[in-house]
Image 1 (cartoon, rainbow, N blue to C red):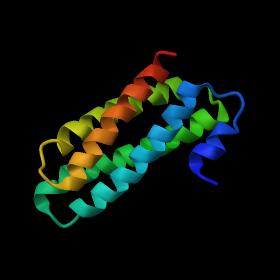
Image 2 (tube, helix red, strand yellow):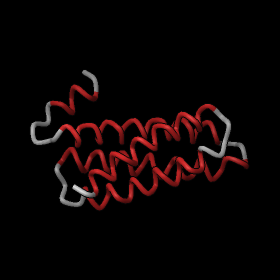
Image 3 (tube, rainbow, N blue to C red):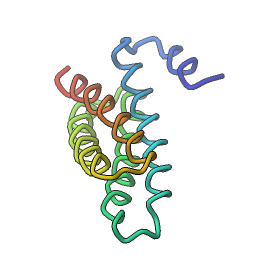
Image 4 (cartoon, helix red, strand yellow):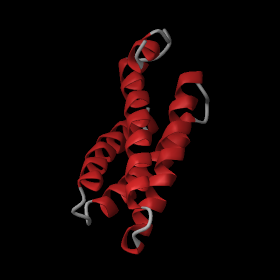
Length: 118
């Protein structure tokens, strides 16, 4: 069963919440990949650090939303901020993993901003 199939079974979630959970999980995965690719390159240390922060925040936010936590909206704001900062950093690098990461993070940040205002 895919993640979206599993998330779709959580009855109390809106479509917007389901999309945000999927975006957060995708962001966590792509950030882990990007951070791993950046390791060992001194010019990419900040990118790797920011990616690791986003991976942790995004996966935590997805879990908070899935369980219906009252703290989800505050975490959504933090996740959106981290996604935007990381995307800004990734966009400065030509590496494919950074460009892919930046694209995914922009979408995740938008989704999280919507959840923060909900």
